[in-house]
Length: 228
Image (cartoon, rainbow, N blue to C red; front, side):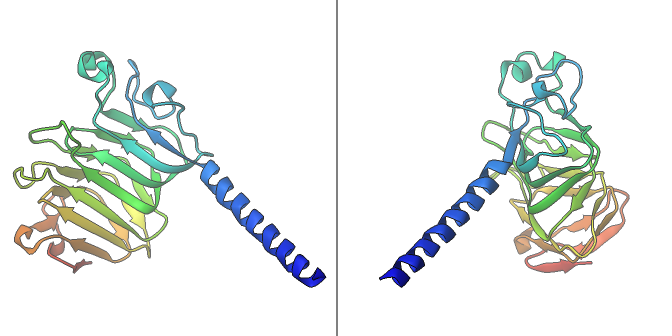
């Protein structure tokens, strides 16, 4: 009986410790959503540009989200607010993932962001219409192998939405898979130095994946095709 009680006690302690670790991890990671309400600067260090507090280099970040902005500041008073103009002025920032609305024209610049295994997801949000795309001059440093998902608006014209990447994408040895949905535009005007790159998309959407200067990068995009 005593041995069984000891085993039960050990199991209870182990489960309690596991729960503590899970709760600590959940409490330690925070997500941040861009608001762009500053009337002066689009800096990431300003709390007025976020829904809540601003991220810091010491913050463990789960997801950075750049949504379609529907506040009065960015619909009625957009001329006096930074809104879709965003600058990472926080050095050493890391996030597990990043989500961005590519149905409205974000311009994101500044210091490098280290991006984790959650990768990057860009797609038009509900309410957006017409041609638009995001310009990202901010460099990305990949800390793990990851998948990026880039989508055009369903039912829209091919390459009506998408991404223009002007900042370097680095992370030697970390594989990058880019999933292209509904025919988005993807333009690279940068140095991309990562592990193997795989481009995924319907065969009927085959197009050359190339740098803005015309240098072909990785051949033609098609389902499960490897790019080098």
